[in-house]
Length: 309
Image 1 (tube, rainbow, N blue to C red):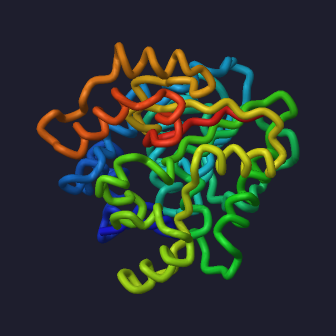
Image 2: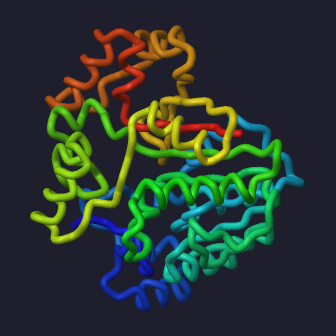
């Protein structure tokens, strides 16, 4: 089943009201366990794992700071960050927001506020936040509402909004997949649509394929490293630091600066291990990284993290 962002959020529960009732009566963790699907990402682990904040080590978080988590979902980042500074968590889904309120109350997170908001029209004044986060969200922005506005335009608008509400010396953190991840060439399905090869196609061909197979337009755009950096600067950010988040942006174990070829080379030669030696595709990706020029590897990694200011 393909996940999609809409008013119901990442719809795991067939009955969202029952999901929220379980969260209120038996606890938010039990509610996530109750809707966990086999072979799906571990939602409870994502909501609790300390390395959800792993790449916050790249910035200096102070108790007096205000942070904004756009598309906060179940609060994997927002709830942990709220123990370090003041956090506002927003999501376009009323279900996700209500769940987050329940979690915040049960965890007694006094520094966390939660509200429904759209990434392309944030209800905050200019220059308000010290930190803005979009982790696994930008690709969904154009699916949040039915519109004829091209997906890239919607995504640039969301980036412009992040820049608008950020203080002049603040930091914007963006985590997202690479359109040209080497695994996609080997047949790993693109995760947003659960379809093989679609991100590698020309946009017009991907649009036609999406309509033929799922009867929906293709709006879950991801990009190359260079395209992301261009979009970010078009939105008004002057500086962009690009990182390889491994194994992914959800639970990063390693954070490798792609502007430092020696760091990439060291990681690949000394730290990188095959994720699953018995999986031919994953082992092929590992071999590609092992034997490829570090400068080339940077364009074919799975997940990017961008620190923008």
